[in-house]
Amino acid sequence: MNEDQNRFETVFECDLEAISDTVSLCVAYIEGQIGQQDLELGVSTRIKWVITEMLTNAIKHSAVEECLLTIRINDAQVFFEKKDSGKPLTLKNYASSGVADRGPITWPLQEEAFPQHFQVYHNGSESLTVLAESPNRVVFYIQEIESEEMPMLLLNTSEHFGLLILTKASDHFEYEYEPVTGINRFRSTFNLQGS
Amino acid sequence: MILKTREINHVIQATIVPDEASLANSESFKEEMISLMVGGAKLIMVSFENVNYVDSSFLGSLVVALKYALPRNIDIYLVSLKPDVHNLLTLIRMDKVFKIFKDYAEAMEVIK
Image: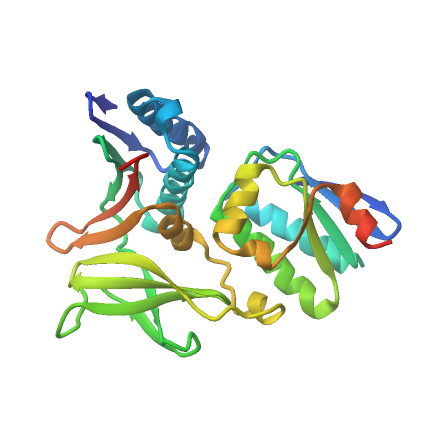
């Protein structure tokens, strides 16, 4: 663990039993720096959701023994980054209809021109889309779609919620792949009260 | 066992025992839910009264259970969600998919 006034680093050993303690450690640092009472209502909860999902994803998908967590804080924002050298993020590229699967997205992206938008998740009421401005970095965002009613709403809802939670709980969520080093960086940003 | 169950008037009340509903127990939860349905349950009320935190893996299992239930004319209600748990369901719009009640009593009232 490495801590100074505005920066905190800790290594997560990708142990399921360690998720809760690691989340508590990170949140305690943030609340200690900002003051629990100064965190906008809900920000602390959203930060917990994001850190938990990032750590869960590390265990489920990265196939690494550890990853580095970094928190930086300034007057306006909290930045959280998970860095590892495991498997690159797997994203499926769905057609805009949400029906036809156009296959997985591989890194670096092979598109001839940027920016590009890919729909990577679809449920009955919203679409999770990535904006790629370069071959190695994507920013996630939500597109509202015409809401369906049950039971179609359920049938069109994927049970994979991790990236959706990361995107909706963050004010900004992005992924970057470094092809030379094989390093993955997942970054979430949270805006602070009044900023 | 993740679920503590009891049957009242052909309704299964299934209370999640752990205080964290997460990757650590999501598979067990899914298996226990499907076992209840295979065993003949027509309505399962899942209580989150002990749950302080739920993650995407557990929510995924919940959706898988409902997808299993739907074509078999089985219903799943959620009850006693704490605010952070309810807020997470709302964030990902699962409050539109599940029938959610304040507690077992309110859920039992609607099926009378």
